[in-house]
Image (cartoon, rainbow, N blue to C red; front, side, top):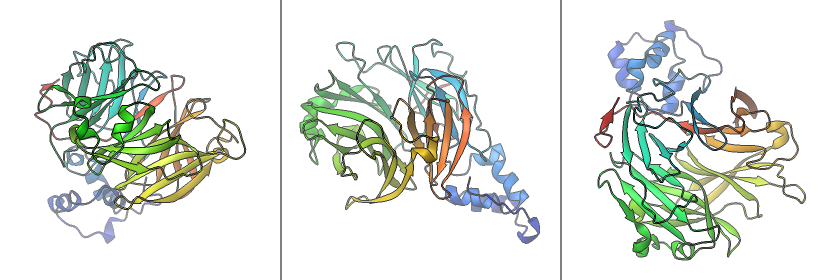
Length: 386
């Protein structure tokens, strides 16, 4: 995706031993790996070799597909210019995963998180690259509740254990409760009972009392970040939660004009958010504003890009969730991925070239996508294999 005009002239490349080339490449960041695949046919073959690929830093390879309700479809969409991932997209190695319409793909973070029975029966955490998996019990809420989103956090640079975050809201304006699960302790912890932890840095106290709704999430700077709409103050904020809910940070939303929040993600080491801008009155939006948190400590937001729906979809006005969804931002380059529901297409928008690329037409109406970045090291935290 970085090499629009590759020059594959081996004559200009020093004939280094293969092992030396691989030792050099595995120390480079992802963007450099992709650029150097254009140096020569020999280097391209070394980088694309399935045996060697596991040694290099990984980036977004594509998307696992789900239908409108996020039920897992067993399909995978590879990005253009990326070699097909080293996995079975149906995840057939999950021999104990019930194959029925109750299976949902919830989240990805160096692995995938599934739930079955709306979380009442529990969860499955798996690593498609190594075919390892682990069953996790339900969060143990005393009464059924569908409004309890669950997320996985796994950063091997911080810990070789994963954590699950489960947030429960009794109703649209009800009290927010939180529980976390660690693959090390293997138990759910009720963080709401330790509200002092959740109030560090401000913000959690008022949210735990209700009048707030959660949406969107991303992991950056060692914290899981959410978009929070505080209904009492009628404004968006971003909440950052550390491991096991022990720290919290509140970041102001960059768009001060009341535009709707669409997406939160990370790219190239920075926190990104997207909001829908509006021309005139009404419920429809005219386009998307893309903001980057240039300085995390000082909360310096910069408007990086605006793009109209006329440019993206050929329509003047659109509604989030009805006409489209933002599904991802590329972690290593300026690409944004969206689903256009009316024609069931996954598209990519390049902020640098301002070009729109149609990637795939879904088999299922209102298809949803979960981004996938492989992690090739085996983990003792995931005891089951094949």
